[in-house]
Length: 187
Image (cartoon, rainbow, N blue to C red; front, side, top):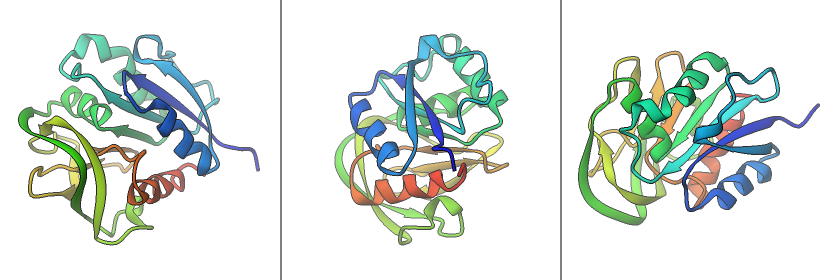
């Protein structure tokens, strides 16, 4: 079997190396483009798209329009991590709000029936580094994980193709296992 390829869109994350390393550890090759240079299409080269965290540009719909167009037309599984999830949510009409700064490991309850969470328990510890929070799932999405600080820790499109995580899954063992669940969607 050919090694699957993941297009990683770098939105300005501080942990690009760790994110790529996790996908490579799970058996996927990765290529990186920055958000301003996304291709118009995948041309069959990639089996998935991952959107990295960002530095608070999630509100900039015009800047991210080419990225959102790629995500909606690609037909492959997509995972937005932290700011990547926020970009997807804002583009679908979601609302972000300032909240307490959270840095470190935090406990999140997940919906075990979702295939993303095949390899974890109903309560996971994931790494956070942010102050913006999605208040509710936008139309066409639903919350599949929550915590005492955020009603939408994990997000899934109704068709099950697009996922998002408030946490940086490139850190901590539970994050790796959630990414393992995602890789099973495109293998």
